[in-house]
Length: 430
Image 1 (cartoon, rainbow, N blue to C red):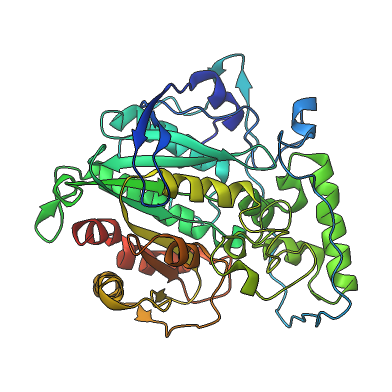
Image 2 (image 1 turned 135 degrees about the vertical axis):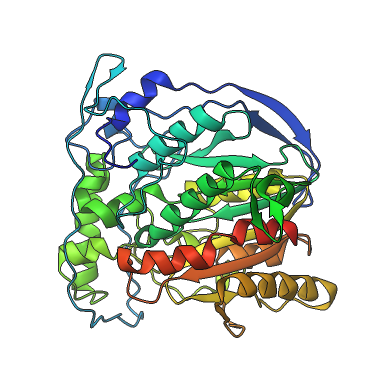
């Protein structure tokens, strides 16, 4: 939130969630019991991205998660080298505070409904995102619903924000920050969300209001699929609350240097972090041609696919959500960098025509070029949709930006102007 001095940890004192169950028939494999949330978000305690210590509960891994361990590389694996130039160490957030159950802030003036998401800076943190979601709920509670669809190894919630024609027979999924260093995608989709809510009854696209664009389709927005990875990229080891995980990050870096996976300094290594908090690259962990993913037999900041497909809480959260929906017709994945659109994964027939049509729609809005088919594509969310979706869901992957990630804020105005209408265009043409 702009100029915010609210303590993210204090949000837990003022947020609760109540879920009611609904059953959907799913093209992804049978009816499933899906929680339909009310309009109040529940944010866990101590959700800060840059913690200074933590309670004993923070020092344990999430129950049921795989213990964090360092996995050594294969003797036969060809080392990876890097020639990337050093980049500036990420800044930390302003110190925050609270008193009992009351949020304390130097700003007494209530924010306007259009002033939540701050796009004046590149660093958009998990705690800031939670603040913004809470603020948007307070203003737009009648047209927005929120649910947590998973919890990461470092105890951060993965949020699904639902707008549009809630309860409609068709659904669209929009997800961002699958990779930690690509956190500008979270800023983008959160501003897309706020723009849609603030213009619900104003003309935004093709002579239609946002409400009209979303008629007949329920939109699920996952603004930060990999919050642990984002926090590492933004704050280094101090972005992780669990001391065991922090220790493992140091070990991962040292082993990656030893095995010649990287030649970056430790600071720059974390800044360029793509994986989740356990060193697994989420977009190589989906069960779509997973066995064909190029092998890196060691936890790393990037490229390690995990011990098995869908082993990570982040991967499972997105797959479970997709499987739970009755008719997910479109799935938009935001990544960085390249300013391109990926859509061709070897689809055929009518399904291929639908996919290309959606890609052309996105291209007409963004001006981004298509990328030719990569026959070796495997392990990503789009690969999983193609292999398991039965031709029901059209996957589109959009790469924003042009420079090395994390992207600088100087790129954002162009990114925003090209992408502000993507949700509307995709919904209308789904």
